Length: 339
Image (tube, rainbow, N blue to C red; front, side, top):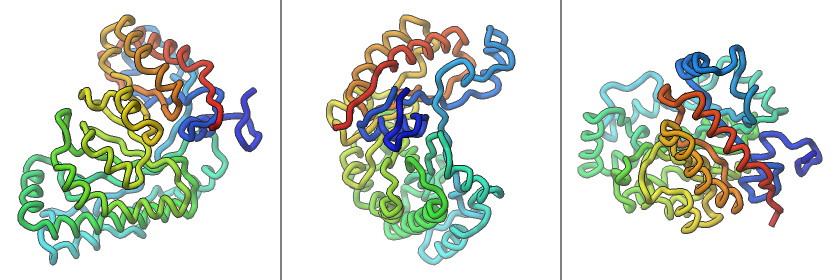
């Protein structure tokens, strides 16, 4: 029976910690993003046992995300576009507002002190959401603001960063988490919609208050969950203090995980990277995708295998079972010695 460093039986939390430290785990973590009810209903019609959950049928390591409300309360409309108007943003981003955390927060925090699952904390919504972009009209407005009044955009990001840091500290005073998670929906398959220089000089400095809090509370895994080809930004992200990348539904050769590992090595841990689309195609495509990507990354360590998006109804129960069973086979026996 595998044991953790403290002598306890190894659980999902230990597997994640050891894998991301390039340490020793009985096997790599096997996460699942959870399935929508309409997907489960379709699968039950196709043969999934009634009354059974996926965790009853497959090896699934439990993972939970703490999701503080990082949006302005109340929502701001119109969005502020001058230094004077940013007072309203500061007021709407009150980190001590009790609505930032669930009503049963104290009970949750107490329960998480003794847990087996991996616990992650969302700490930042990313560049575009931090400046109020949620549609193309606002996108154009903010791009003009960046060009014509960069000091306003900079202050906007500073306010958001300072707020995020205080909310994160509010959580971390009560709960020790295994990883911090920032989202960055900053572009598309072609690349980010702002230049690496702008990201380096304008955006990343405003992450510093958050990163300082995470370091102070010894949060070792700092993850960027990217919804775009952010390859040009990776060196600056590593320099800033991020050490793990989780790419979601990006179809760009530059973001291929074996390529990223070859270039950035152990500096960059990885989560995900398995093309969701192959599950629509059948066993041959699934096997090719998994056998080409998963074993080399597992052998190197610092990698948690996962589909790069949530399964939809166009994936059959048969194909999902094949994927899951093959992934479990490939993960079996990958235990890494501490270095």
